[in-house]
Image (tube, rainbow, N blue to C red; front, side, top):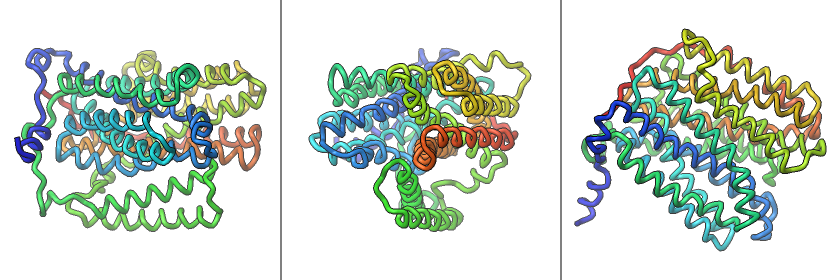
Length: 477
């Protein structure tokens, strides 16, 4: 078999077996497969954050150097989500999603065998390529693979899988580091990735009937300039933000990076208006309700990750043991996962997704306000975290459903990529903001200021939530 025939075979999506495709509940099998990728991504995020001290000891490196194990992944992921989404609309979402599992698993295998910190960082960057291939397609596969009436519930289940992975990550990472080795933190992804490939091959519907053939010119030309501008802008922005969490850059360099990010972003806007097939599809962003929906997605993950980073600092500073502090913090993603799956059933069935968004943002804001005002202790932190997690579990699935209903089916992967890009930017801000507050004003005062700011940002999400045009989300065969 020559290279062309092999490429054609690999890029031709196979339909599901007839017995599966003909089952009236087959779309839930596809949702379960997508949830596996969502779980894997957040599990890796939770585990990696915990293993950084062990990596510093093993490689005899300071925290600023070891932080690149996390930072490299985040930089590549944010830069690639929207471009990979655009490419997935051309190649096929199932093909790219399964390829993401393969790349992620291979990079995880290499990360576990890494003999130097530089090699580990490089493997993490490749791992982020696989993560982008999965994340850019996850929302689209769910939104276009289930009937319209089931979209919010399906997106809620996907969000719950993310919350479950986030909740299990720190505990599992601690067990692996303590009883095995830091290398198993990465090797554990390999069997999960292989299982994801098999499950996706049989359970995901075909999203493109014929093999994709790249075009040299015309409307099929890929927007390379847009990709480079987007990569540069997001990299400069995240490097500037990372100075708040210990990256050794002087103040003038951080200011220069912010200026570069702004200039490249302006260049990106101009490029996207001129490109035949733009990376970010300005027409999608300008669709009524999509722009505020992306802002709400960013805010939602900012509200989720800030307490995850800030909570352990506040609890351990108040004398709470590390293990107990970790268990308390897991209440936030656990409540998020529970609310995303069954929490909406406690609300009136007549409520629209907009109403659910506003209610969820209000509840999350109330929980964060309580967290800011109450004295630090196990019970006084646990209850507000449960409240905030419940609100976010209502907010994000309903908001994602609103955004995806407004996006045409043929652009669903790039739309899903933009949703996930907004989520990743919210995650980055949620990681940097607490550290900045603590550095400027100390743990107690700075933490309280950050939490009060988050409560105010939750009010902004209430204001931004608004209706979008409804588009059908038909199931696929």
